Length: 422
Image (cartoon, rainbow, N blue to C red):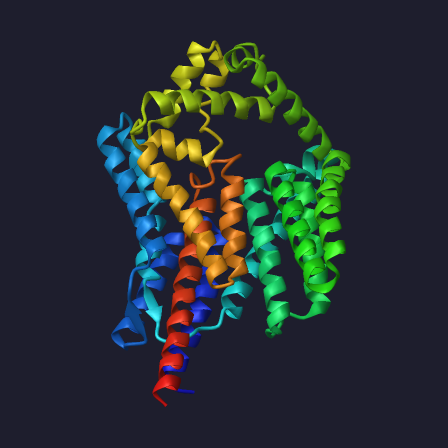
């Protein structure tokens, strides 16, 4: 094995360790980052890597700069400093992954690291829930939601689960070592089952949408056009039936539908008349309402770390005193970004998602598509880039996959050029 091949083996292995480590314990990110920086520097010195910043990486850096500028207008220096520290991934990953390998590296070890980390953290959560159940005898409280996901918020863990499923399918398709049908199928079924226990409505909806899209695509490739057109009608209806019949999920769905109908009649009155404590849907609608009001009042943003204070003031105006004391974030990343750093920051965030989706189709990288659409969908219901669980996860994978796509593309272009010269 050449020195170049050995280095790329080390790089792949360490990226797998990195993906494993940040899932298992997000606080390890600092130590893991130092190791990654060391590996990257060695590769650049040995000329195994070349530096070239891509557009997605540049957009992430611009997003970080927007938060940095927002610090100038903050009323909470301590909080803004914490936010900037947490969001350093928006700066580090784009820069580190701009050091592209001079030849294609294998993804199997990287995917395996992330899958194993997700599996272990899921099993640990399940064991935690079972211990609670056998101690207290309370099934609903112990075996659902955060009780089986004590290390990551259920919506974040559901994002890890669906991404792991996609990676497992990719490994099975590519016939990578260890990705055997005997364990991949049970693994996928277990992670689908865990979606039900996590009770993240956005996670379950995204899973059902992903399954429907995959089945429709498979039918299109395998059967007649008539069956394909029928599947476009039948499968969405089947997903709707599933949502409205699955225990626990159907209640969330009907509550959401009822509250949306009430909200549309009079947004301000809806918020004013809500009695605290509220359901999750009521809280979100109230927060989205005041977030939109703050955004239109401050189109250039309220400043990094100021969002909770401004939302609290608006909630008080709408007579939601108890809810205002909770200091909740908007529970929507688009509102979170727009309120905090203004419409320019919001545009940058939207461009990151849209351009990642564009590149996923350009390079036929379905894992990148899965990640970008998952971020898009979940950002409608949660501030996904406010916790390390989301910041590190999405910025790491999006920046890495985009960088490797350009590496592969450049390698193919080089090969085509050599063929033409011959």
